[in-house]
Amino acid sequence: MFQSDLFKGHRILVTGGGTGLGKAMASRLLELGAHLVICGRRKGVLDETAAELVAQHGGSVDTFACDLRNAAAVDEMMDAIWQGGPLTGLINNAAGNFISRTEDLSPRGFDAVANTVLHGTFYVTHAAGRRWIAAGDKGTVLSIIVTWVWTGSPFVVPSAMSKAGIDVMTKSLAVEWGRYGIRLNAIAPGIFPTEGASARLRPLGAPVSRESTQNPMGRLGRMAELTDLAAFLMAPNCEWLTGQTIAIDGANWLANGAYFTHCLDWDDDIWSQARERIRATNARDRADRST
Image (cartoon, rainbow, N blue to C red; front, side, top):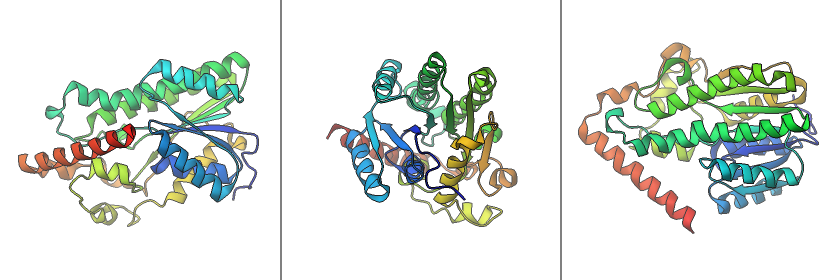
């Protein structure tokens, strides 16, 4: 349903584009002719992804290591990107999350999620928007959020709060920036299994068979479904669609509401095991970033 040169002449930044959903969406946009820019905190991972995607699809992928929690670093990255030409689109995909009883959260734990998800997303969107407005250029922003913006969700309160903020940002800026030809939309995916999310949201290694069984369509998401929706929302012929958040979850949130309610049954020992496994995952990630 998509032309192979749909995004020819477009330059699109995907935050958190080195792994998971970001990598999958970046791959689809590159396949459809976009000049890609991907950013994240691990330059080595970004460069490996770029080489892999170019080998698959051809085209061009630029990489930038950037801590999105740092507004000044985001602005410096945008200056460097714009030196090669203005972006036409932005996908806010970078995120962080882990399950925890809220009473066990420290301020540092809350900030670890909120600073990346809420603050980082705003910093990147603001930096792109200011440049588009100053130059009189149009732009498209797509943010990846969650169905919890409608239902709430226990044990992931920092993420739910932060993603709800992005949902409101999407609606607010669609109105405020519409006059400049800048449009904003969001996708709220159901479960599209990725290694990073599974390690922090299912640290005990629990299978997702329960989620599949309870889903009205009896399965989890297929990555091509998400990437095609992202491409559709970013496409140049979709310019009158703005200010929307679209769920792609097989109607799960309508049928079942919030995620992680099964964790209400966990006792102290189970939570202790979960915390230790999440800490181990975080330690491995820090070690990867330092090499």
